[in-house]
Amino acid sequence: MAYADLNTLHNPSTGTAPPASWGDQVRDNLEFLIDPPACSVYHNTTQSLANDTTTALLANSEYFDNASMHSTASNTSRITIGTDGRYLFYATVTFAADGTGRRLVYLRVNGTTSYLLNSIAPPASPTTCVVPVIKSLPLVATDYVEVLANQNSGGALNTTLSEFYAKFETR
Image 1 (cartoon, rainbow, N blue to C red):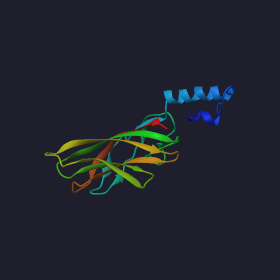
Image 2: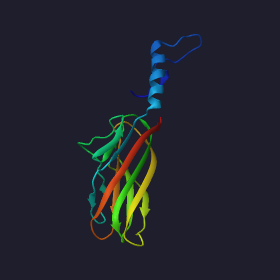
Image 3: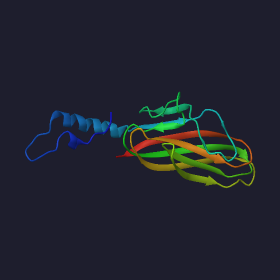
Image 4: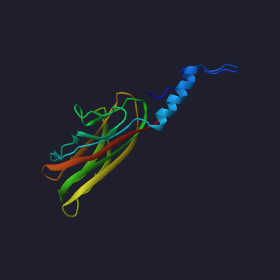
């Protein structure tokens, strides 16, 4: 069920009553806003991230997905939008302990537009590094968003997509 503009069903003028379908759509719109499209996904194991190579992070598991925005079988790095609107994205990426190199996390839309959202300087000593990112994006149906990560420690580094979350905010 998607949100619909009520004026597409009935554009009121003085003295006219709205059709029954208008009332049905008011109910449907309220139900949509009570439980808007949202999902939260993660990867249940580590993913090796090559040195200085920006890589889309996989998500093979779901905490929840109330709008079929994610697949655990194909294109698992993607959250795909089904309803036009503004969405809030949140991701947490965990990098294995290493004392050298920067850690970078991006959101990428439709495989082309990337937003660098967080960059962490090399830690003072080898320690696990958790990098959170958050961004609100206006999107249309069929757009997809991925979390990308990069590190330059000098070698491969295990990384985990701890959570990748999306929720419809508004039209």
